[in-house]
Every structure is written in C-alpha cells, then in structure tokens.
Length: 183
Ligand code: M7G
Image (tube, rainbow, N blue to C red; front, side, top):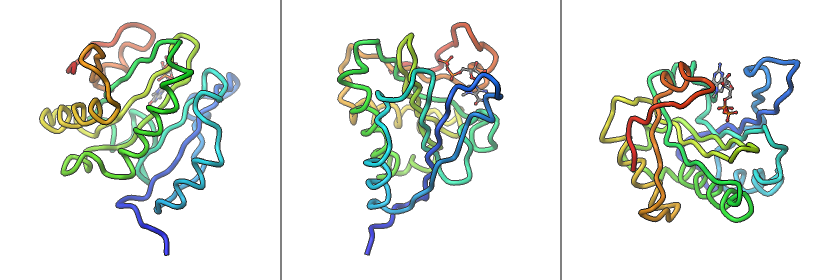
C-alpha cells in the first residue's frame, strides 16, 4: 500500500503566453495524496532549472488556486527567497525539492495548517521561491514557518528571507514591495 500524505496537493504550471491572461496561463497539472505518487510525478517532470524562463511551478493544497485572490490566500503573504543568477545551477532545484518535501511532509508542525503552498518563479533577473501562508496577521505562525524554512534549507545567518503581504505585492506590481518581516 502507498503512504498517504496529510493533505492532497495540486501541482500547477504557469507558462508565459502573451496572448492569454496571467490567470489563463496557470494550469493545474495533477493532484496527489501519497508519497509514492509525489515521487513518480517529481521524477517525470522537468526540474525547475530546465523550465523556460518566465515559467513557474506551484504546489498548493487541493482547492487553493496559486493566486492572491483565492479565499485561502487573500489575507496571506509569502516568505520570499531571492536567488541570484549563479544559484540556478546549484541551489534552485535543491531548494525547491526541499520546499516541496517541507510541504508534503507537514514540516511546520502545528503551523502547517497556516500553509497554503509554494511557488518557484524561473526568471532571467533571478529565480524566486515563495512559501505562501494563509494569514499575514498570525505573527507567531509566520515567523515560526520562516525559521523552520531557513533551517531546512540550511540558509546561513548571512542569507535574508523576507515576508511580503500579498496585498502589498499586488499594489506594488513592478516596483519594490515592503517587507513585513525579515529573518
Ligand atoms: P510574478 O510572476 O509573481 O513575478 O508576477 P515576476 O514579476 O518576477 O515575473 C508578475 C505579474 O504576474 C504580476 O505583476 C501580476 O500581473 C501577475 N501575477 C502574479 N501573481 C502571483 C498573481 C496573482 O496571484 N494574481 C493575479 N491576478 N496576477 C498575478
């Protein structure tokens, strides 16, 4: 028998097709609820570093769309890990897999229920990984998730991660978003 996960997860893929809206470009690829199904999907798809620039993968709890507007996300925000260009070779795939394992393995203990999903943006200007939580107002939960994330990714003291509220990101499209927390 397969090993059930705590949650069912949906993998999304975004491809930058300029003839369509951002929302139309988000495609739910597949959902899974066991460790074995996770690995068969993971082994079957391209690594993040192999995607065309401008693409995203997202993994969200079933029923949550990878969008600020979703009921589950609209009060929330994200821990953002900004990678520099050189990190695509070594760190991007490693970090993304570790984030996926944190999600499906419910690594954030009692705060795992505040977690909605995660996104990897493959971008020429520098790749990004975002861990989305449901409620930016739950300070203890947000900070604990951030601390756990830094530990799991083995990010040193010199690496900063920042928490940004989706409402701020939405308002500031194209310019600099304020950081609500920094770890
Ligand atoms: P991005 O892909 O998150 O980062 O946002 P990038 O700037 O590094 O490419 C790019 C653009 O995609 C935003 O300015 C929005 O126009 C659109 N976009 C991104 N997100 C996460 C959303 C979302 O959740 N909802 C909507 N409606 N648009 C979004």
